Image (cartoon, rainbow, N blue to C red):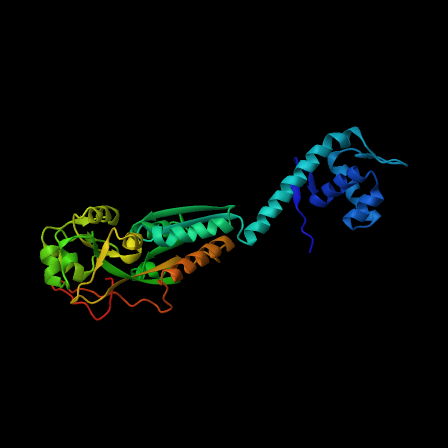
Length: 340
């Protein structure tokens, strides 16, 4: 199917790409017949295109006879026609590349705790294969990222999951993640010297115990431990990580956030024997009413999926609803906890 691209030159003047291509080819070949053969059309068709173009520009473009030559009008118009063809060619190629995900613009919002170990490697792999796609990544807490998504400032977002019912109704989860939350501190901390650590040991030796908001609210079991440990030390994860690296406290972090520190040995994980496992669920989401994903966005989502799979974060099941603490009481963790 032929695609006709029309160009508005001046008021009342329209010309299409086929007319310009015919004009350019005749100028190159110096012959209508050879130009028609090159373009795969008949002599009457190429003549009709030039006649229509001459009506638009208001004069004769070629001298006819035994020898075909450009008129003064044709010589003046030729460089502009070629420039228009070049720009149109670039535009059509850009559109084609966008259709296969090699061009375009992606706007991603991410929880700060996932922006490094998950988004960083995924984006690195993506830009190596798609170097001409413009990428914008914004990181922050859950509320900020959800607001950016609902306001149309990003098209994909990594958020904690599930969201509140009102927000979740407008969101579609593309990928679901399930990651452990681990207690970490610097090597040599008093807790690391014990053969076994229980909650009472953590309360006694883990001061300060950071309160970290890696979900929408504080986890009730961790909040209870922090209240027993003494004065509140509520910090962003970036600040708490710096303090933990300096040996100035301990905290429960989403494991993805401190994975590199644990691998290097600059932080160590402490198992609390009488505290059941704690997990944080999150998701890559989009707005339900935003239309289909662009090819570029779909390719980035696939890169995130592969990185999540490498980190063993992917889960095929829908995350469970988080535990809820009743007012004035402490909810005891179940065998396997989701973040509240």
